[in-house]
Image 1 (spheres, rainbow, N blue to C red):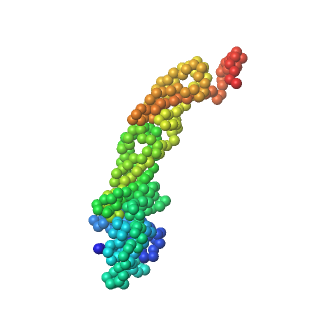
Image 2: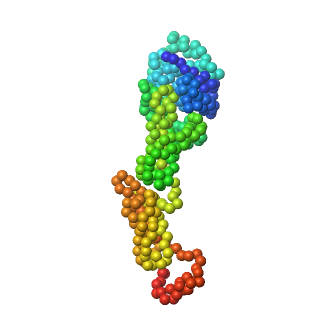
Length: 334
């Protein structure tokens, strides 16, 4: 059973704090990331560093590793140490260079092999995947959320972490869909990275788009995780959306409101002529069927809400006409 000194891999002492472990990992991950380092050995070194961090960043995994050394994976998989390892603790010393652990080794050969699991019959990781639930290793510095890697790859190897990010779209972009290039900050590299996304038409706020294999790399050779893009709709200067229905304002003059007429209403994909009914007051809505937000089972509607506008400044003649209208009209607004 091959022993890997994870402390030596990260270059930290056995009593290193979580912050020291994270700092060491971030430095080495950027140094050996395959997108940065083209050396043929860089990818393997990156996996070794990531595997060490995956174990040492987690208190339970780290405690199990400190106790069982090379046998810690067996404990994580089965919840039970292999024969001869039940009461073994490996001593790595204080420098991270990897102590000999001879006393524990002789205990294993000649000492007490007491039966029973040191975990009281249960796994220190519970019934789930010992690597599931891993969050973002870069904390608040990353735009990605912390979806844990799920499932397994070859043998016991877990998938890489699933990442999440916000994808801000205009209403037009969400409605029409199509190909887009988006740029996000890669958490391991700490620099922008571009992704190609095919948006389905009519994607809604809160919907998640999955980019398979574009999440975190597996720390021990399993498949990469996925990247989930959560759609967020930007505020629109002309429309507001409620479900699949869109609402927009239609400015009209006082005489158009009183006498009726025609006006042009802008839609998400063009414009359309509408008739203004005579005697329209502010707030009246003109409904345009199927001109709202698109959906597979039928588009929403577009509602043009009338707003009566008046001139900011009246000419002398306009004032005379309004004054005459005020004298002869029997209409009472209140």
